[in-house]
Structures are given as structure tokens and as C-alpha cells.
Length: 332
Image 1 (cartoon, helix red, strand yellow):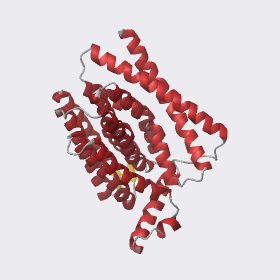
Image 2: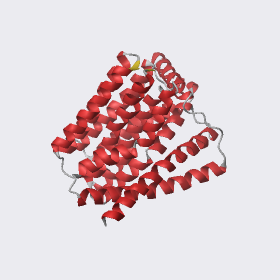
Image 3: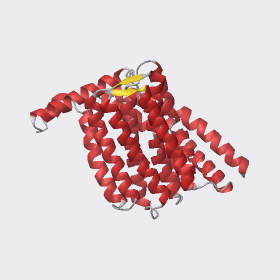
Image 4: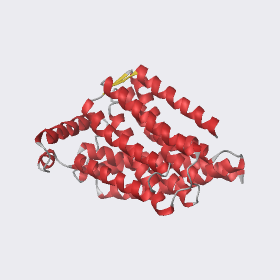
């Protein structure tokens, strides 16, 4: 049984991570074919890259392993901030960011992290939390997907619509060098669908393998989800972020990390929790959600105050993530 669990975990991980990159590239092409804006293409890419952690989380929650399911999503969000932004800044030396992008995307990211924390501590029910998150997320994605002329006509005060248009333009400028897909074809859509099926299947096997090994060796569920699966399922995003940072295009990592985290909470945590329900709050669960909010706040403050992230800021973010790991291990 142990050997089978190891095979399931390793093979599921390798297949899931390799196919998720194919899924991202093909969906970007399909999005280009549909005429999506650069900012909305970034959201599509983040959603596709999140397929492993979302699937692993849903699988765990459906098997009533709430600690694993919540840990995968929330833990991967903490890891994303450290790997995509912290490590990216260390590799690049400096990532220059637009302040309007930090404020616009950061406000949404912080809001989602706070609602996530409220859901974990049961201040609000998963259904209420899901509604609160979807209202803001769908509005945000709608604005990103709209053309500038549309934003101008939606009835906001002129100063607000002008600010939003400038924020969207600046976010697209950050994403432009990271997302340059060619126009997709029907074959790209077919390949994307096939890749999605493979990613989902492999991620289910990966989650089963990790949970079995954790049970066999008496590893706490929150550690299996919040540290092991969280880091493994986020590796594609981390590798892509480091690659872009080395090429001097690390600015795209901010939108990718923030959008990825928001989608993770909505699709991988709140939607299944609204259907299946959540277990009673645990100290480790609250701890991991609290660290998610805290590291989000710290990252946004550093990004805004420094008009980007310097190498020192990157090291600080990574150090805080290490402290999170230590704190979680001690708590369990």
C-alpha cells in the first residue's frame, strides 16, 4: 500500500504539473482567438495554472478531509506569495510595479483573503462567504475584460472611470511580455480540454497518494495540505515566475499571484465548502488563514511603498514564509 501511494503521489504530481503548462498555453491561445484583453488573459492563465490545487482541494473536501482541502488552497496562496513574488524579486534584483495595479488588484486580493479568514473561523457561513467573494471577483474580472470605452460608459464618476482605465492599461503593460499567445484554433480548444481532463485525474491521484502517506506516517492533515500539497501544486506558477524574473519580466508575477490566490479561494475552497460544509474551526486552520492575510498585507505594503519589490523585500517575504512553516509545524 505504501508503494502504491508513493507511485500515485509522484506520478500524479509529475503528470499534473507538466500538463498544466500545456493547458495554460492552449487556453491563452483560445482566449486570444476570442478577443480577450491582456488583463483577462492573465486571469485565464491563472485559472488554468490553479487546476492542480483546485482539484486536489475539492477531492480532499469531498472525502471529508477538510484540513487537507483547506490547507491546499490557503497554503498554496501563502506559497504563491513567497515563490512568485518573494523569490521572483530575489532572482530579478528588482521588480518594478505600477502603484495603481498594486492598489486595484491588491484591494481585491486583500478582500478575498479576509473573507477566507472569516469563513475559516465560521464568522460567516461558506455560502455567505462565497456570495461576498463572487460579487467582487466577477465585477473585477468584468472590468478587466471590458474595453476602456465600456468602462467609461458604466456610470461611474469620471475620475473613477479614468483611474480604472489607467489601472487596466498598466496591468496589461505588466502582463504584455509574459502573455503573447498566437490566435488559437479548434485543435487548441480540443487539446486544452484533453489536458484539463488529464490534470484533474492526475491531481486526484496525487491527493490520494499524499493523504495515504500522511495517514500511514501520522502526518497531520493540515501539514499534508498546507505545506506538501500546497507547495507541489503551486510549482508551475513558481517556475514560470522565476523564469520571467530572470528575463527581466517579473512584473507579471504580481497579477498572476494575486489572481491565482483569489481564484483558489473561490473555486477550490468556498464553492465545495458551500456544498459540502466545513468542519469546526481548528487552531491550525485559523493559523494558516491568518498567515495568508498577514503575508498578503505585508507583500502589498512592500510593493506599493517601494513602487515594486527589491531583493531585500523578496528575502523578507521568503523569511516570513519560513516562519509560517515553522509556526505551522510547531502548532501541529
